[in-house]
Length: 174
Ligand code: NI
View 1: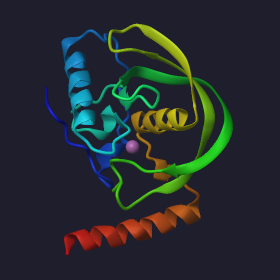
View 2 (view 1 turned 180 degrees about the horizontal axis):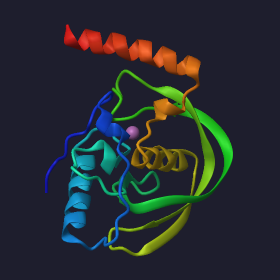
View 3 (view 1 turned 45 degrees about the horizontal axis):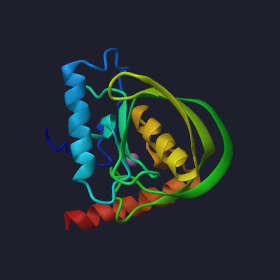
View 4 (view 1 turned 90 degrees about the vertical axis):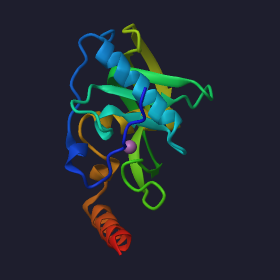
């Protein structure tokens, strides 16, 4: 197993789209899942990770999430899809790839989502997630589509964010 590097904004690799996994049992896929779970366990204050934000050459459609319901349990979703969504709720969001200690923003998401995916053994699963868990899944699915939460901000909020990050990046260089 290995701990994978988390790619940081504004690296264009964050815009990669994940490929759909055909065979979950493929040893290379299983290795990536094991590495992702290890990386999640070794990253403090990390709710979840998507393959596209990690140093993986060709990232598959996989996300690992620390279960908000059962502490210590990791939920692994392969080829996750949202099949229905309802309600709207705005809340603060941050991202391990976007200076989580310094940067966050309020993002509107669906309150409730119905999710279809495969688990790490390839078994089909379907479930409903609400509130924080639903937000987490939507954030990770965005990653797998090459999108960050900041891409969902209004133009005004996004320009504020860009100012903040430009200052942050110049402070880091100093
Ligand atoms: Ni993120």
